[in-house]
Amino acid sequence: MSTEIFIDRGDITTLKVDAIVNAANASLLGGSGVDGAIHRAAGRELLAECRTLGGCSTGQAKMTQGYALPAKFIIHTVGPRWRGGTHEEPKLLASCYTSSLQLAVANGVKSIAFPAISCGVYGYPIEQAARVAISATREFLKCDNSLEKIIFTCFDDRVYRAYLDAERTDDRTDR
Ligand code: ADP
Image (tube, rainbow, N blue to C red; front, top):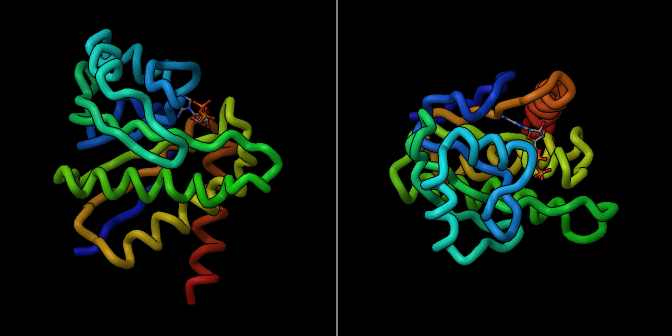
């Protein structure tokens, strides 16, 4: 089996996949952007479960139920804040993708959707973040292809174009 990668425009809270990834903050207690949208759509029970998790470090991931979402699980990962690129931001962002994918596989997830982690309030340059997302995911897939489907959900056109470009560039450097 090989894993299919999709780059789609849309709202991640509406996707009927096994797991969606949340670009959370370290408290895991909700925030703005996609985090706020996920908490609103999942309902209050999500916050109750998040309170039991004791937060999450940057680059790591923790999982909860999806509650009122169409997705069964939510994988909460904490992206790095952009601080000029010299504070291990690429490594930490890559780790968000790898940790989330590992957690997904360990829990039998077959389909997973990611938002553009760190590309909103955390200020990561979108083109660079998209390249990290694609290359970290492809690196992971070299060793594990038990997932059936990975979706990069792009909330706006700029993110969508950046992912399409990153995929093309990564294709060329792979050969
Ligand atoms: P961060 O704090 O990690 O930067 P944000 O939530 O501020 O996270 O932004 C991350 C990305 O998620 C941005 O590209 C933003 O446009 C996008 N986003 C916001 N809402 C949604 C949503 N409902 N579905 C998918 N992506 C979303």
